[in-house]
Amino acid sequence: MRRSVALRLSAVLGVAGAAGAIALGLPQHEASAAANAATGFASQNGGTTGGAGGTTVKATTGTAIHNALCTRASSSTPIIIQVEGTINHGNTTKVSGDSCNTAADKIELKEISNVTIVGVGAGATFDQLGIHIRDSSNIIIQNVTVKNVKKSGSPTSNGGDAIGMESTVRNVWVDHATLEASGGESEGYDGLFDMKDDVEYVTLSYSILRNSGRGGLIGSSESDTGNSNITFHHNKYQNIDSRTPLLRGGIAHIYNNHYVSLNESGINSRAGAKARVDGNYFEDSKDVLGTFYTDAAGYWQVSGNILDNVTWSAKGTENNPAGPNVVSNTSVSIPYSFTADNASCVPSIVAATAGANTGLKVSTGTCSVTSSPSASPTSSPTSSPTSSPTSSPTASPTATSGTNLSIGAGADGSSKASGTSYGNVKDGDVSTYWSPSGTTGDISIKWSSATTVGRITIVEASGSTGAIGAWQVLNGATGAVLKSGTGAGSISFTATSTTKVTFRITGATATPKVAEFQTFAS
Image (cartoon, rainbow, N blue to C red; front, side, top):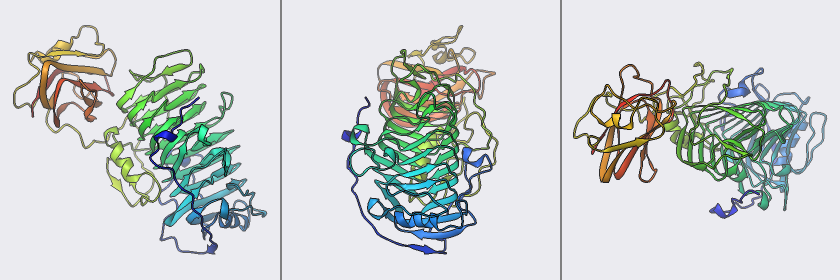
């Protein structure tokens, strides 16, 4: 049984009510539906355009949303529904018509296509009322909050899912949304973002998922493996017990997300699934990637991720965490172009862009933000983020000043490659070096008493310059991350008194060779 997140919440969200009507032909200056083209897998299979080119209406109740769907000429007539206010059980009823198939206890997008639902003005909140997509295609949901949807207790909606998709769903883009609960299954909640029974070509971008026992699943059982081609990027998962997501079969591309407080497990690839995991930042979490709660193996390709205070459980018959030495066990080809931010700036980029009512801001792919979304990035896919982070080294690999505190100190680290030595990084000789046993690993300088360190210089051995990719500098005595970035060289951080400094290589283009690990007071 999963632990409840209810006791970890600082507040329980209340219930509000609102009534309203529907208006036709309103201008779209309040918010721009699909302001930039759909990204990720939602850009494939013909693309996802929602209601582009159709009539624009405004709705302030759930009934008005359903009425807008039901008064179209057909179930595929494009429509953009601008939503403002609180949508709940009190203002949502079933509406009938030839172009719709609605229900009273949810926002029902069933057997329809070419629809955009976008929050405008003061914002759109779906309170205790989930959004259900079934047997539908070409749907955009943007700039909305969906909260506290329950499957047990009162009132109930959508099986407890904030947004749920099932039964032959194609091309859905959910963007700049806030999906949240107030606990786990024992409090009546289920998943925040669920897909099952033949769902493909979906992207979740620039969204916040928080305070739930379950982030979401792709496939409802070990036999439901026909769901695939799902992208998650620039989202924030916070205070989630598990399923970020749970992937059964199929392919998912998971990049530039910020994970904070994953309490039991994170990305759970199982039953033959393949997850490509690029440039994410995992923080204060447990078992962030692997196959969990089953012996049906899943697979992953990893590059450029940062692990900040991540712990790992032991391997078992039904527990296969990817760490602590996280390496790829498959390869995943991505058919679309994307530009990934460096993982070191993901927390700040996601904080500035993710969630409803953030102005539809997006990343430029170079660790900066634009408030004027443009078309999809056109750069070619890369196996790891290549943009320069703000924490890039600022001096050449051999530039030094001050006293090198490593000379005469001790050294240790993770497993080393044959023929190398930890001590080679502190001997003042650049012709000798240490290498990890693979492409990632730790090397440390340690002292017998507390020493103040504010800068290090990593000198790569001749012939290996540029091999080191993503890294972290850790206070080896406490495990705290002092700095993160990419590339060797001079690295400054807040001066810290410690007995051990660790340079952790988390990504590389070839076998790293560290000739010298120099340490300085400032």
